[in-house]
Image (cartoon, rainbow, N blue to C red; front, side, top):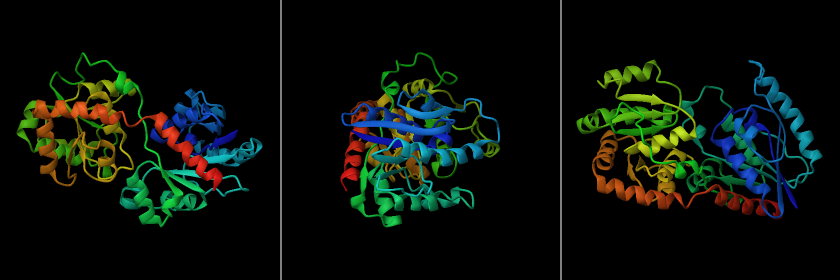
Length: 369
C-alpha cells in the first residue's frame, strides 16, 4: 500500500479556490484507489473545501480565526507538518504549493505547477513577490512534476530548463453541478439576454478588452447586457472605464455567488467571453461547455488545448477580433447551437476521475524512479 501525504501549504493560505479544490478532489479519489491511501496534513487551516472533504486528515479548521494571526498559523503549520508527515511514514509527499521545503530522506516528492504567470506577467504582482523564486526552488527539490496542461509544461521547460522527462501532464476536471443544473427559469439581469464574463478581472485577465469590445459594437449593446460573475465588486477605475465607454451602468453588472449560482449564470448566458492573455488551464471555459454555454475565448496559452474546436477563438489584444467573435456567437443561432453541442462533447473529455488516474500514473513514475 502506497501512502500519499498532501502537505499544508495551500490549505493555510486559501479560504477557498481552484488550487485547494483540485487537491481535495484529487486526495479523495487517490484514497479510494486500489494500492493507495491518502491523507492531508494541515494542522491549522482556513480552507472550506478541506473542512468539507471526507479524506483522512490531520487538520484543524480555524472557522473563526483571530484576525492578524495568519502568519502565526502558517509558521505553526510549517513546524508541525513535517513532524506529522514523518510519523505517518509516507510513501510519497505531494506539495500543495511552492514553499522551498527541503526534501528529507528518500521519500519521493511531487509538485504541481499550475501556470507560469508570475514569470510571464511579473508586472502584475507586487515588488518583492517571492512566488517565482520559491517555485524554482520547489521544482528543483521535486522528484517528479505535474503540469495541468501541455502549454504549462512547455513554458516550464522553456523558462526553468526542466527536463521534460520529469513532467507529467494531468488535465483538470469540473464539478458535476455545471452539467446537472436545470435550465435557468429566471434572468440574472434586467430581463435582457446577456454575455457572461467569469472570474477575476485585473491584469492579464484582460477584462478591459471585453468591455471595449462590447462597447465598440452597437449590435452587442442593443441586444445584450454584460455580466461579470465572481471577483470583487467593480472598483472606481472599472466604473470610470464603463462611464468613459458610454456604457449604461445597469447594462454592465457584477454578480457573485456559489457554484450553483454560477451554473445558472452559465445556463442563462448567450455566450461566455474569456479574454485572458494567459492561462495555465482555464476552468471557466470548461465549466461553460459542460453547462451548455457557447464559448468565445482567447486563442492563447492553454485555452485552445482545453476548448479544442468547441469555441470561437479570438486575439485577446485585438478589440475587433473579440467583437467579431461575440457578434458571431451572440447573434447567429446556428453557430451557437453547434458550439453548445460541441462543447458538451468536449467537456466530456475532462473529469476529476481522469485527473486522478493520470496523477496516479505520475505517482507510480516517482515511486519507481
